[in-house]
Length: 132
Image 1 (cartoon, rainbow, N blue to C red):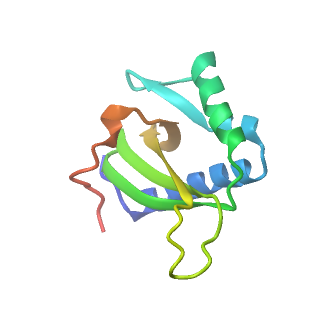
Image 2 (image 1 turned 45 degrees about the horizontal axis):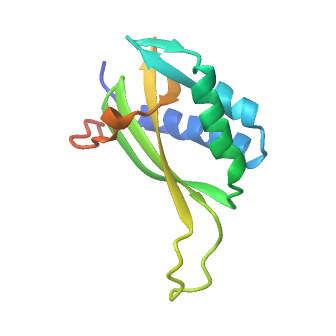
Image 3 (image 1 turned 120 degrees about the vertical axis):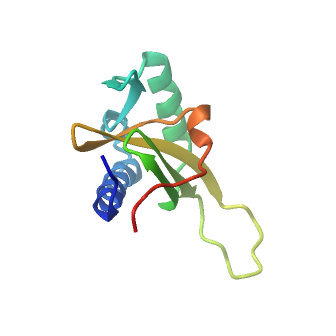
């Protein structure tokens, strides 16, 4: 199945829903949006992985989240890189690092997009196949 600009829009909408939940400190809601992908099936995250994710969500209080890059190869091989902006910089000469970076793996199953955990193998982002 081919990918189009509509797929990009759907994934961006999902990411904004996820960001809104995080900014409103609805960590359970945010966690409910993320699954694990195993053999083309969506699974609930293991308790250990849920604990790891929730701990990371709770220890930072960003002012906003930003989409950094989106890579689309196939409907099951995509990656979204995003950042948590911890504070706004105070002008062009402010060289303090102010972002933490994350990745999430969107997949389309039966025509519907889902957010899944990105692992190390997913971080190779060459050869995007999205149609313009």
